[in-house]
Length: 356
Length: 283
Image 1: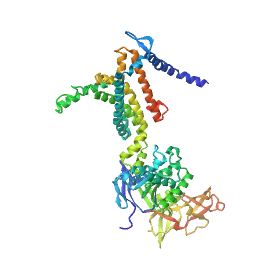
Image 2: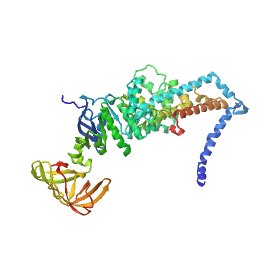
Image 3: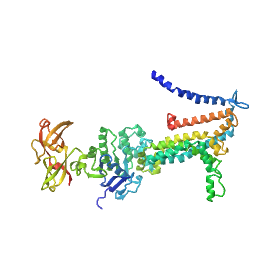
C-alpha cells in the first residue's frame, strides 16, 4: 500500500432532514500536517469536524484513521480529540481537573495524572493555575486550558473548531504563533477550522477551501493564493479581481483573450478559441502606466486613490464600467484621479478560474 | 425624595397583607402553643411549656420518624422518576417540549381531592386495576392496593412529582450540551459523561426540587387520610386531629411550630448548600 494517510475522509455526505450539508467530501491527511478547513459560516466545516470526532454520523461515506474505518465508533473510542469553539470547559471543575479529565476517566494512577497535567499546563504556560475555576480565567487562558485538556492524551489528530474566534485580534495573532509552534513541536496532526483567511494562510501546511458542502480547492497556502482553481476560491481569499472574456487566439502555451469589458490580455494557458473564461488577478499583482506591458491593451481611468496604511489602494474604472481594485506602490502624484492609463500584469500571476 | 415615598406607598399593600395574613397568624400560633388547653373549647390564660415537653413521648417520636421517612422516600422516588422524565422532555423538539410541560401542569387545574379519588378508583379492591387483573385471570382474589403505606407513597409521589420535574427541567434545559460532547470526546461513555458532567451541572435543580418536594410532603395530611385509611399517621394528620377532633389547640400549635422550624432548617441548609441568596431561586 502506498503511503497510507493518517486520516482519510472518503466521499462523506451528510443531510439534516431535507438539507444536504455535505455533498461528498474526500480528503487525505498525512501525519504531521496542519490542514485548515476554510470557508464562510454554514459551509459545512464544523459538521465535517464533528463527523471526524464522532459527534455526528455521516449519512454516507467513511472516516478512516491509519487505514482503519472508525465511522461506527462512538467519540470516546476514536483516537482524536477536539478543541471546541466555545472551549466547552467543565464549569464545575478547576483547571487541574479539567485537564486531568481524560486521564481520570481512564483510571490512570494519581501520580501519573499529576505529572502529565503539570507537563500540559507548562506547555500552554498555565503552571500555577491548577486551582482556578474556568469562570476565573480570561478568554485566552480558557483557550489554553481547552488545548491542554485535548492534548493530554497525546492524540494522533487534534481537531480545532475556530479556537481563536472569540479572542481579540492581538491575542489571536499571538495564539496563532503559539499554536503553530506547539503543533510543530509535538508533531501532532491538526485539523483546524477558521473563516479567517489570514489565519489559514499563515498557519497551514494545506488549506481546504469549503463552500456549500464541498471542497472548492485543496492545496498549499501558496497554491490557493496564487493559483486558485475556482472563482469562489479566488474571491474568498485575498483581494481578487475577476475578469470575463473570450479566447481569440491560441499560441504555444498561451492564449489571447478579448475581455468583455473591452481590451485584450494574455493568459499562460493554451485554450481553444471561442472558450469563455474568467481570469482572477490579485490586487497587488496588477500594474498600470501610460504604456502597457506584456502586450496587454486594457485602457482604464483612475477613479480614486486611498491610503490603507503602508500601501496605496487604487480603483480603476475600465472602459466597460467594471472597477478594478489595485494595491501597490505606484505614486498617486504621477497618476492623479481621472488620469487615463493602461492596465497590465504578468500573465504568470493570473489564474483562469472558469472555462466553458 | 419624592420617588422614594412613591415606592414605599406602592409597597404598602404588600406590607399590610404580610402583617395581616402571615405575621399576625404566626404570632397567634406561637402564643397559643404556650397556653394551656381549655376544658371544653379553646385555651385558658395559663402559660406553660407542657405542649412542647409532651412531644418527647416516644409515640410522637415515632410519628415524627415516620413522617421523616415518608418525606425522604417521597423525595427519593420523585427524583428517580422525575429526573429521567425531565431529561427526556428536554431532548424533545421544542414544540413537543411545550406540550409535555402543559400536560404536566394540566392536573393542577383539577382539585387535588378529585385527583386522589381517581387514584382510589384505580386502586380499591373492586377498582379498575383489580377488576382487570381478575378478569384476565392473573389473580384469584383482589390485591390489597389501597389503605396501606404503599398507597400513601403513591399518592405523595403523584401529587409532588411535578415540582421535582419542573425544577429539574429548569436546570437540564439550561445545560450547555457541548460540555457533554467534550466529555465524550475525552473518552467518557454516555453514562460516565452523565455522572461526571450532566448530573453535577444540573444539581441546583435537583436540590431545589428536593426542597420543593420534601417540605410539603411533611405537611400533606389528606393523602395519608384518604389513601392510607387513617392507618398511616403523619405529623400533618396529627396536627389536624389535635386541632379538630381532639380540640387540643395548644398542642396542635406546638406541633405546627416544630414543623415550621424543621422547614426553616431545611431551607437554611438548602441555601448553604446551593449558595443561593433568595428563595425565588427555588422555582
